[in-house]
Length: 328
Image (cartoon, rainbow, N blue to C red; front, side, top):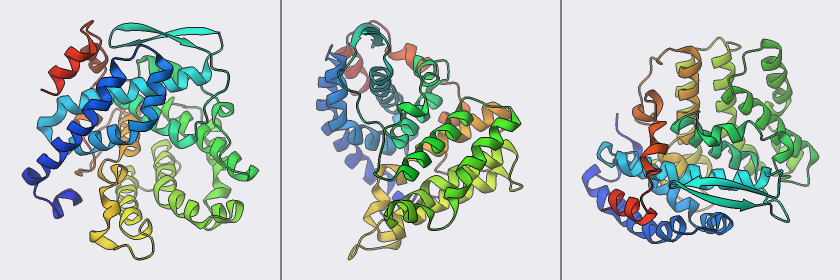
């Protein structure tokens, strides 16, 4: 099975395009990793986060780009860590290690707005690179109140908080059946067809959640044993739903649909970050490999202990030295 990207570009012909992506993000990354002001790091990250994640998405297509993928995972994890640490800071100051150096964080006058989707990216990367990281410890301190208001609709904001509570319970390894059921029941009313449109007046939000988030909720129900479908089938459905969204749903008026959709180059269409993290967590909880193979599941991310990534880039070398070693 080929990744859908390779239906349009031969793998070796796509590499120069990816290398160009690396070149464009290298300049911005070099500025980010040499900054000692963590709030500057956050502000800069806002401008380049999409490019970093897009480069990571493309780099996962090639086994020989694994070192680059690991470095980009580290950078995303660190910037996410800074963002959420700033938002959950209780004291006036704290510190965080970036490339082996301690950086001081000061409490901001105002929290940044961070959504459930922002958090899902954060916890997914933290899960992939190892649940003993500072990110993982920090994630346990995040509560529904830290998830920002995203809409004038109180019902939609409540839905976001229910989503956070459900996914957080899954990633934290919740085992109490009554708690699991409580979270699933809280989210259930929102899964009705058209419910998100009803509470927001926005059908495009309905499409987004119906195709990209609801299948992941089903994945949790399967993992916890409340859905009779095999877990592998839920994974397959989530992969198919992702493809359908970016090929048929996301295109706007006049855009090509189907296999020619330009949205199939979106970073979340190329690399299923949330799905890979959730499959990794399911395997950690059950101790069983899944009987399903797909180019959209990155084996080394799912099956290997990647906690070494932190030590790999926290060597005490300067950020520039690490950068040059990773992107020669």
